Image (tube, rainbow, N blue to C red; front, side, top):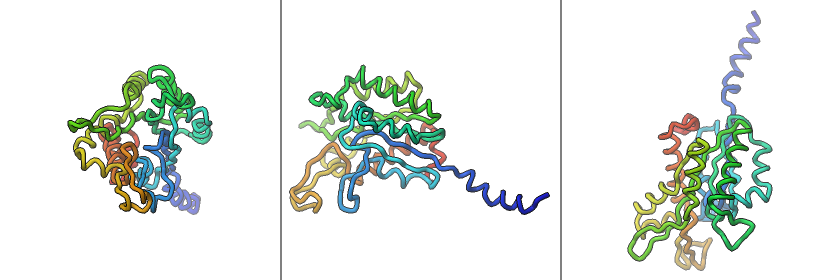
Length: 245
C-alpha cells in the first residue's frame, strides 16, 4: 500500500469537501452594494449578507440601483449571471420597486403579465443550471399616514411573487410582510433610523440633509438581512447549514 498517497489524500480531503457555494443576488437598489461604504450611510440588505455566512459561501451581489425585472434582463445582466451560475449555487430574486415605474417603458411591467413571466423565467433558467432560486417580495417603504398606519405602496407586485412561488414550488421569503412588521414595531419616529433621515449638517455625506423612506441605513440593512437569515433557518432551507452560529 502506498502510504504516501494515503497521507496526501488525507491532507487534501478537507479542501475538496469545502467547495465554495455562490449566492447570486439579483434585484434593485434596496438590495445592491453601495459605493464608499466607509462614508456612505446607505446600504443594501444583500451588502451585509457575507457577515452571516461561513467561509464556504460567496455572495455575488448583482443587484443594481434602478433596475426592474425587465431592465435587468434587457441590459444583459441576467445573461451575465447565467454565464457563471453552476450547480449548488443559489439565486436570491427581489424585484418590484422599479417594475411599478409606469412612466418609464424601459422598466415598467404589469404585475400579472410581464413581471410574473420574468420571475418565472428567472426560476426556470436557474433550475436549468442546476442551481436553486429563492424568491423575495419587496421590502416596504416607510409610508406612515397621519394616523400612524403604514400604507402599502407596492400594489399587486408582492402578490404576484407569492403566486409564482406557490405555482413553481419555489422557496419564498416574504420581505413585504417581514419589513412591514419591522417598520411598525419601530414606530413612526423610530423607523426613521432604518432609512436615511438626516437634518442639514448632521451627516457629512449628505451635508444638505436627506429624507429617504425607501433605502436602508446600515442598521436597517442588518435587520433585514437578519430576518432573511432567520427565515432560511425556520424554513429549513439547504442554505441554513452555511449560517454562522
